Image (cartoon, rainbow, N blue to C red):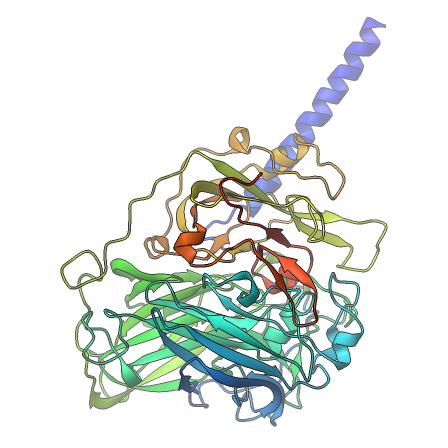
Amino acid sequence: MKRRHFLQSSLFASTTLFFSRAFAAVNEAFVPSRDHDYPKVPNLGLSFSSPDTEAFVDALPVPPMIKPGGKLDIAETSHQFHRDLPAAPSWGYGGVSHLGPTFESVVGEDVTTTFVNRLQKHILADDIDVHVHGASVEDRTAPPVSVHLHGAPNAPVDDGHPLDLFRPGKQKAYRFANTHEASHLWYHDHAMGTTRLSVYAGLAGQYLIRDAFDTGKEDNPLKLPAGKYEIPLAINDKVLKKDGSLRYQGTPLNPQDVWAGGLCGDRILVNGKVWPYLDVDQGVYRFRILNATQFSDYRLALSSGDNFWVIGSDGGLLDKPCLVKELIISCGERYDVLIDFSKMKSGEHVDLINTIRIAWAGQMVGAVTVPNIMRFKVADKKGKVQSIPSVLRGEAHLPAALPELKRPKQIRRATFNTDVDLKNIRWVATAVMNMNNLRFHDEIFDKPKQGTWETWEFINSDVLFQHHAAHVHLIQFRVIERQYLDVFAYNLNNKKPPLGTPWAPDASAYLKPGIHQPAPYELGWKDTVRCPPGMVTRVEVYWPTEAELGFDPDTIFQTVDGKNLQGYVWHCHLLDHEDHEMMQRFRLLAQSEK
């Protein structure tokens, strides 16, 4: 008996050691090697592709600049994505044929803007998966919308809650109070279950807040480029059909009306055009860059290898310009960038390119990294701004410096997970994406207290080694650090309970040596943070009080269709993930509440 037990124990130990080493090898193979690149995997060439299109033949469209207030239609239009393709159905705000106008507001400006849903049939109706939480057959013929001003501290009724929907023929007035400092926000559709499709169809736009320092005028105290030298760039990737229309189905392997996990397009668009060009003067330009895509990260660089400067992130300016050769920007993130063309000669050009390797799952079915983004063609005219400011905060006549990080001891953990539901065999949709092992409708969710500081640990425990991007409504936060995680050991040694039971174990015992500081351009105010595969990303959160906000963040409000809602949401901002249970509610309670 002792010998048999010994042999059994030895066999068990050997098997455990084998699988532990195998898992460790896989874990190491999928740890990003260069600025969070995915590993290279076999490409089966099974993706749909766009028709051939020549690069840099369409001029960059610059969206109109408008003030908040009045009414804005949300409507179907006709848009030409490339010179060589026919115009095709598209969605836009305020009469723009794809995307929307750029709002320019002022700190303290308290204005109500009414959005009117004039849509008809969803132009991607065949791609709606009615099994995704919140989606329905009605969404195909009467598409719902919800307008979220991303990054703004708005009252619950004005936040664009994913269940606060209004269908064609209805409208909603949103009060955007603009109570925080000059910053770079954006607005987009936030309807539950169809966000990925409606944003892809065109429902997104930029929103700039000005103050006494960052005025947007040529005589601004910061001496930043303004007027025609300040240009918003909304970047996303798509797949187009021969008739010029949008395709959301990435591969014929996956049925069109079944959620597919994520789409990596083979054409990168800027402000609604495929690989456009911009004629620039010989001077410094300010570009307000938004990653408005549904799934992909981009690593931005100049084809010349020259440096450029990052001066701000989601929630405002950095203390001083940050000189970089590359900039990683994830879904929903924004960066404020200066590029100096003053030393270039007339007739020369330089391209904005993408150098990051796309997600391994996308590679497997045939998606490839798309390097081209846009081209800058240098003219013979001298630009108005010829130098880069040395400081942006902390000196006389400038905004106050960014505060020191507090690194709060109160920790709130959040896991990103992909599991399998064998009771629901629906191709890729068999996967169950979630945060903390919970679904949106589960009654267990976060209830932080007003006036408190917390460190949030976003634990990317996803065994498929996917990147995620965490976005928390209502607040801006600061990135503290990142650390690599032994993903398999973390999952193996912490048994996951049935879906619907919270699961966010302490990751301390599974962390690998070495702290990775955030990139210098991530040191400012953020509302969205990239959570690389196999890493724990830590951010510092302050939960404001009712007095600081100017409204009760926990008030019950009524939706357009008469339902009562309460609280906010936080979610992964990869829109395919957001639409598939990677979104949770939270309520911000008063100190006295339990």
